[in-house]
Image 1 (cartoon, rainbow over the protein chains, first blue to last red):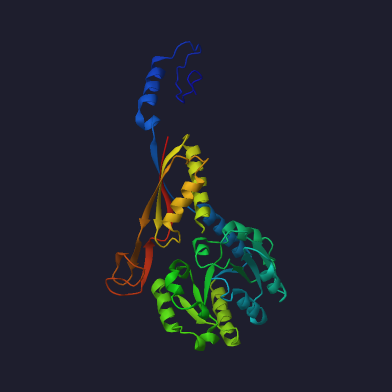
Image 2: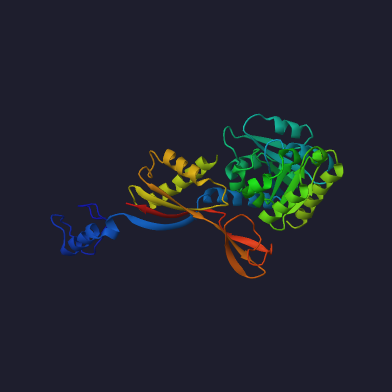
Length: 255
Length: 113
């Protein structure tokens, strides 16, 4: 770098006495300060995903799960659709060993519920954040005894909007929607249902009490995500829980 | 309302690019936001205007190009741009389609000095 003016032009014949600039340097100097492309504003092409840091961390998490032979599943739904209840029921029936990383704004209640079933659980309280991101899940996965597990669930913050934008580093997404939430949820929250590998329509034992057109909902799910798997679940019907377990077992074989 | 987290990630990227190019400030931030990306463009604009203060983007204009959904149909082997969310191919009604654009959020370019 030229010590006199601080510009970055180097030259082969730089004088040792810096009393005056050489002609070549002077010419380069003129170009530097008068060429608008070099001096004024410039536009650079970037074309990168805005969440690329999150995506990078998510890939790291996935590699971590892979290294331990653990299938990781992100559970998403609105609050109260039955995510924790589904996990409790699977604890009684699943042939695979699993752990749960819980995301909630406040309280350790969900993790406590899971631990009561002798399932390892780690609670992430997000404060006001409406979703889990890959960095939060990374913290959680180091608290999981991954060597002893075959499946790890990430129970996302109850929210049908924000979690859909964040890859947390799981292999599969299960999205729950319950009968009492009413029809049209799938059409209203398409971004979330686009992410689903499996849609669970829960609390189907309540179908007689609600005007819920379950076939219409399934059709909507398939318009948004062609070929998506859909299962009906009721916590009162153990066989419906077994079907979810079978789906997971099937996916484990292909991991 | 996760737009704040997204703007934070965007501002971090802007700082990095500005440092790499020895820029003093960023004048314009151009993004491409898919209609199926899960963010509300108006909220993103508000979040950007709120959180740019004190950053290299303080004076930056924020441009959002909304990207409609583009699907590719494996049956008729053609791409279509969709006006509404129904992933059936508008040409042949097939559901053998996949989305090729409209789901992601990109930082496209930066104007800096």
